[in-house]
Length: 238
Image 1 (cartoon, rainbow, N blue to C red):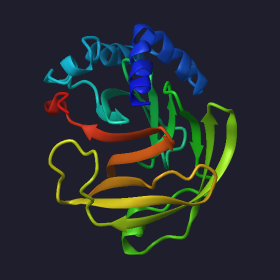
Image 2 (image 1 turned 180 degrees about the horizontal axis):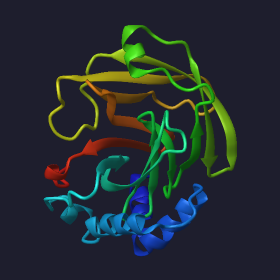
Image 3 (image 1 turned 90 degrees about the vertical axis):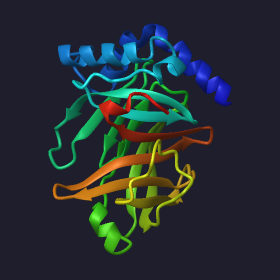
């Protein structure tokens, strides 16, 4: 199954820019703006020599922000295209790779993923989500997540979630040394369709509030992903 996923990801590279623009339109964009096109090109060039070769290249272009993502353990670097500010209280970061995957993050959680064999076209939290700081003090009550999933056109699948703080785990996909000041959380599906292994998140707390820097989520029985903020001086080392 992993070989099938890698083959699928590789096949998307030949039409990266066109594919991403089409996907972006499906996510509600009105087209590829010039700054987005520049980021598309940056992401495409990062992987144009193949993943293993790209993983040794540094430094990265400091004009862009990067996210290291793994698909079933296969590392890919994504570039931040833009931040959707339609909801100022919880803006959505839109990231994309040189091979056509588009990933959206909101509240530090997966808000959408397309361009992969299984997709979460849209993710919604009708009543919002608990604040990270609040979850450190006590276990918040359950909250709802609603998914639009492909394949199968499963629209509006509702789940009840529970989040709790946990000690620093030792079995994550974090690349590099794990900072000691991170706070970790586990998010479990307590009821609803599609209960996969719990998601986990790492959050850095500072003067400007909580900054999610790592997450891991299974979106199908055969597709689990992780994401980690990535500094330009880290290159693409795995």
